[in-house]
Image (cartoon, rainbow, N blue to C red):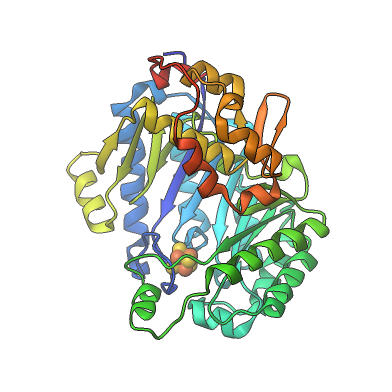
Amino acid sequence: MNRSSDLSAYLHIPFCERKCIYCDFYSIENLSLRSEFVDVLLREIDLKLEANPELQNRELRTIFFGGGTPSLLAPNELDRIIRRLETHFRIASHCEFTLECNPGTVSLEKLTAYKSLGVNRLSFGVQSFVAEELEFLGRIHDADEARQAIDLAKRAGFDSISLDLIFGLPSQTESSLLFSLEQAIALETDHISAYNLIVERGTPLFRLVQLGKVIELDNDRAAGYYATVQETLQAAGFIQYEISNYATAEQKRAKHNLVYWDGFKEYVSFGPSAHEFIGGVRSWNVSSLEEYGKYLRNGTLPIINSERLSLEERRTEVLYVQLRSTGVRRTEFMNVFAEDLLLHPAVNDFIDDGLMIVNGDVLSLTPAGYRYCDGIVTRLMESGDRVPKQFEIASIIS
Ligand code: SF4
């Protein structure tokens, strides 16, 4: 397999001061287990590299600490993790190194220490600037703390700062959404992610909806809010490059997330519930800190499942992740799946309707097309005019 040496790394830090009602990411509230967790995480890094010696010395182009709340890590804990990564990987000089932060957990001292350890991008889970909405979501911070956190990040020397917003809350109005967007824009960060609230099965929010205590926003209003987000951020100079992501310039896009949305690039991961994609195989870890620790103390990797997708499954995945972001690279798609997408009967209709656009080799969605991404991919899942051809997906990772 012709594999490039560059790689991305994701590390899942599974702690939160308090669980938000909508969140289905794995995390626990028992912060006293943090130091013990760092010990087993280091063990996982060592074991994974022992089991996969071909990963040794690969160059990390992006590193992402997600969670959970990575900003609950003390700088010395983060330092231990980075040092261990450095013993196994080369870290690119221009490596994008992101750490997710909860605004209620940072100080100037902590952010300055993170910066000195090599973190060069912060992603703040702000979600809203409206007190009732933050309370509904179960966030630990208020709007002022969010503003202060961004200010502290700038004072600590960060010039790559992202801010997450959530829209489509049951109580949200067009004017409260506009207020949050304007507040976010006023903070002059270079990146904003704006996610539609999804009621995930198993969350407290899901139960509230089931009990009829919370009424979900209807589809028409949710679509209207999505258009408001797009138009407001675009008017403020942001460029949409993914369904939910906006940057002030091309070089300010989230490079780590672009790896996920590429469909072919490889990433290694560590921590409970973390997913990785190496050598054409997708694997994921157990979603329990207790089980995770048991596996590692027994000298076993905590991977509970892995899969190699069929060619047809890979085609759907590549269509979905590339269309939802920067578009499908047609020549590469043709080389792998033996299909010229421009010959697909639906594509020209989508182009005529202003939902898709061809720019050189790339077929992408327009801002209007992003609103119908799922429907468009579903339509394209029906094979077009193509000749079946057997390829090993892993072989095209270059
Ligand atoms: S802080 Fe983030 S990871 Fe933690 S529960 Fe809330 S949304 Fe989930």
